[in-house]
Length: 173
Image: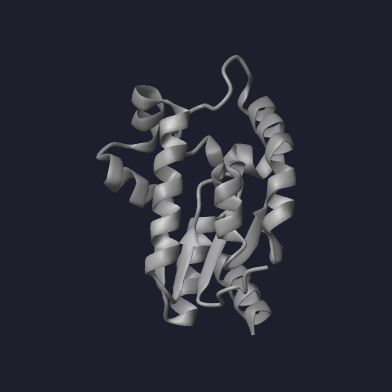
């Protein structure tokens, strides 16, 4: 078994569970760098996540995601990394995640749907379903992967990002 690096914190969980918002706060509290993996993927692909999905397909997106995840892990330290909600799908990604400290963000389906309705920058993952059906379905498919990797689990429901970040930082001590 590989020893965990304590200088890399990965934030995992479904879309709109607060990984980026809280992650920025965690990084600030620790005095570390913050990386939004989706933003790094967009830089590498020279297009938005939505465009990568529509122009190149999900498989190519996942390939780029895996490369960026591995590069970030191998080449950085004292970093908080907010991953995309589906980063856990690939076995290799889960292996990399487990080499750092993994914080799982959870929110209710209702909360996720409300937050997702405010942001149309991400593609629909399942055609022919309502947003709530898609969230329930996709969460059910990913839950076992989230369960496999987490070290710390937080529920992000109607609590300030500062409070959630403080809880995570305290758990790390």
